[in-house]
View (cartoon, rainbow, N blue to C red):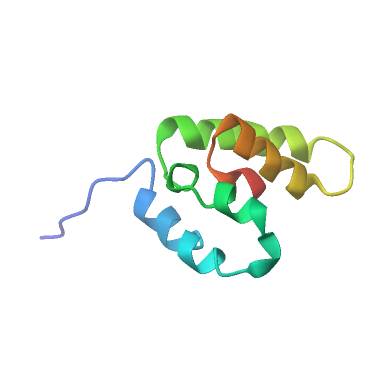
Length: 89
């Protein structure tokens, strides 16, 4: 008899596996003073509030016809305290 697993509506483990680890990203020296604020653990945590805000932030900056949209999305993610990788990606 074939047993199926229940469908997971938010594949949290899959997204967490794909996202870069903050410790690995913190090794980049080019980030300087920006790095400490960028790699706060609450900005990389997946929960409903931070993901929703990050998606909104990313869509907003994607619609703006300006250069360096990813940088603007990352800076805004720091200000509103939402998930940085989802906001930028």
